[in-house]
Length: 509
Image 1 (cartoon, one colour):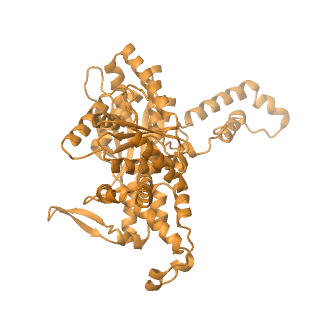
Image 2 (cartoon, rainbow, N blue to C red):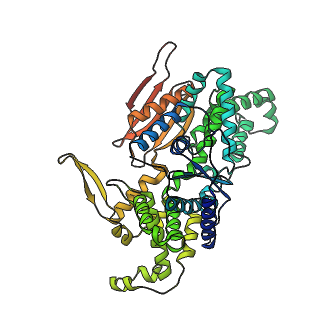
């Protein structure tokens, strides 16, 4: 693969290992796209990671900043990226040249797990499988714009879009599209426009004198004007703010083009955030299964265990998606093998009987493939994380104690722990923001609504987000939210000519 980066083909030994691991993966029932492995050094790996796995992306200072952070982390021994795999067809996976043979085997098995997940998980079913080509096309178009309009001007607009790229609706690709949007509503509005204003006539022969054609036509025009003024855009709160901007913001042609490209890229990456725990857990499950049952030599066991343990280690105060994912898949497999599910099992109050429960159904492998196909992280945890699992994994809620100046366990209750995990994953941990009015107070201002789901807005990030929105909308932006059960409105007015900063304000209503 070219794309501007030099990469090496696999050595004959690695080709043999790749074919061996691929055979084991297919033997276990994994179904994946053709996968192309390439060898790169740590600088190239950091560069690929900085570009989100796509070295063909458009030039932007953010990628350079990310590369610098990754390079320093590698240099100081704080982090190391063993592999990277891209959701395309065929899939591309990159191997570090400095990896040991055991690590290369593990990485290959891990990659096949990822690609199987990409291909078969429902939440990836709408993604662009030719995204490498799309990204390359985007890069060419953006570079051409930079040459024509100036890099600083184009990059400044990209900054604004990247600041709001999370304001999309990840579920929209799965919603049925209405062929005739709002047709019934339009018909209902048309009816009063044709009949409105007609004066009541008791005697038929007086109709032409009381309701002359000129009068009725004037009433129709007034009704149509009033209906148009009352029509709200959008008719209902719209979660895909980027789409609303594309359809309604006063954008130049090149700005519309850039916004459309970056929105497409945001939707491509969305499923990865929705399935982080499942995806990493599935890949870890299979690299563990393949290595321990098929691929490992006796002399490689200790090295594998050391590497695998490093992947699954959990740092204090944070969840490791690899660890939670693999353990929950193993738990599901065990429970469905033993038949430890369903009404009979749940209603049994005998703890000892439950511990010995084994109907020898052997449905575990079938069940985890089913889960892999239909779930995302929220449904995965909501449906399959049990109280026993929570206790075995020692999951708990913690909070910062100002008196002791340290984080402490505040709750081990299973329901509360699960509730908090689901809350953190809902909407990818982002606040729910909707567009509710594109002509707020009939001034052409934008009105957003924060649907309060227990998460208050961070004022600093709110200001920066509204600043970017106002730069794109080119008029003031307003945001309704709640604070301590009281409604509040934030307003950002764009900077006037010659001013370096706009005006940000807030008020309770």
